[in-house]
Image (cartoon, rainbow, N blue to C red; front, top):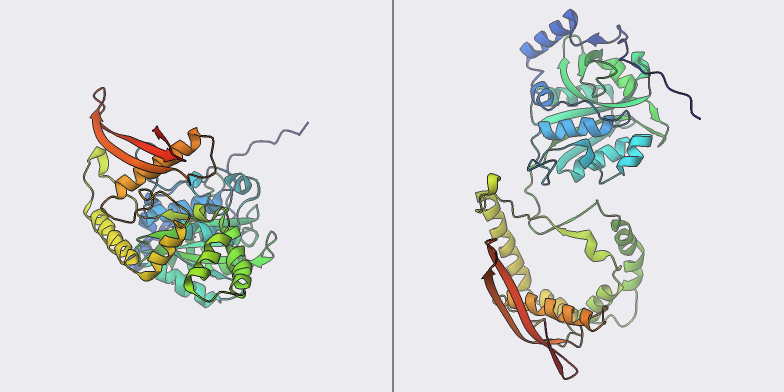
Length: 404
């Protein structure tokens, strides 16, 4: 039976070298830095500040604070109708259970920031100097568009513990001191530290990776989001695609009889990993106005219009026609494989009915051999719940006709 661990209520901040933010000296440093214009990043950070919810969640909490301070929309709900970054949502690069047990590395935090839609510049201490730190720190503290997260060891500050992540909230240039907004507020309060000591704390080795720590700059992306597709790092399937591109594809291209585009595309499609489709996800999301308004926002209308224009340009290319013909080469149902834009809904309905007929017949592997003879779509009102779309069709297989 494990021995009970004594409970703790905070730690006394070793001072010096740190200066408690709420002390008279800390307030003086704040006031002077504010007057000098090097506390601009402090206000959006403190407006979104939070305490890490687990002892090992310092990296996740620091990143959530910075992402919310930058007003980056996570694009998915946190709780209720609200979209907001929380530690529990930052799981695309490392499972939360693993982070809870072991913490998180510098590289994984940078990965999470990119996955969450931020622009990231990461600097390990082995590749930069203390002057680079000062220059990038100054760049962030005079703006609200960029924030610096430090990865450091606590020992140079005479604090207990090992590795830690914290946003930097400000800089006093005259005394060369940085304000650490520690997300482990249950342990130490926010505090000012000499930049030379902060650099020494960054210039330490993370035992889990054997690499030096450092700092990263997080900012909003300036480029528009993808209009069509993006690679999702939330899915483990990217590993099989990476192997396919790095190992299988070069060998495939060395094969014989690849004398035309059709043959090449046929080989590529046939050799794709089974989970390739799961890796590609739509980025363009139809976002409804808050409080249930059915109309689209102006931004979404423009993005969806752009998406349709790009898709139509793709459909008009010769390559698309070749790939389309290759995809439906073995499909005998003309209704399912129609490429006309005008009857896309009918085509989808036909494909659904063919799949349903295949399932009812016990042929779960494929809908080939089933042809949708006639399709009917109509809207009906049911129990006051609004209009419902009803699909009915006749499917023919080996001369036998059945309804679905």
